[in-house]
Image (cartoon, rainbow over all chains, first blue to last red; front, top):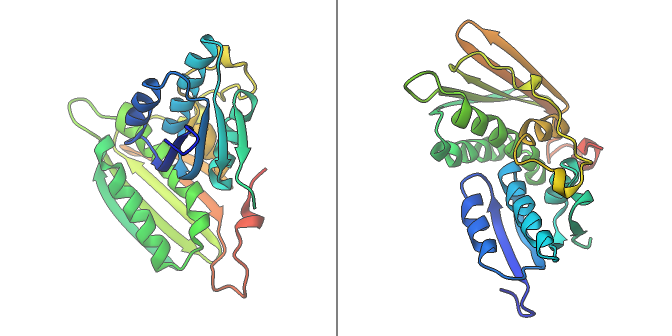
Length: 93
Length: 153
């Protein structure tokens, strides 16, 4: 967790990490802001984590806001059309 | 021209070995680090498809991966000995669908197509062969890092 209570994810979100990431997010009641400044890799297994989490939170009236998303990771979200279903903010610079 | 090859069992646990293989090649070929991401993703997507769906009866598939650089073009080739399957025939997912209509899965091959300049499949005897190509400039090429002009979309 970050200083303001936001969720911080870093490293790689690949097929070997995605189940653990999903379990982690599932334990949080309101993981609305997720800081991805330290996330330097994502593949479709990682997209699945955010899709399932977003579906769960939307059903409960909430939603994810991803902040400080690196350009390479942002490209993956955009190619998958996740910028249509998630609030995604690129890292500055 | 540089070419490197490796072989692994088609099991999900082998993914980190392939990632290391790609990164080692990147360093040896003096390629810009930021240009590795599309290739890492493409390699993971293709390999995980084989590892989870592409096994022959009774055993994991054998997977051979090669990376070759010709000038500014990089070719990633992934072969397996599983049943004939052309992943490029998979339907394109609707990336404009509403959240409620989104399905789990089906995005991997779509990402590969988006990230690469060219993707081709062939069945060669008992082997599936997927060949992925993309331009990647070298870091020592007259101050041109190359990632911007390689960016797709």
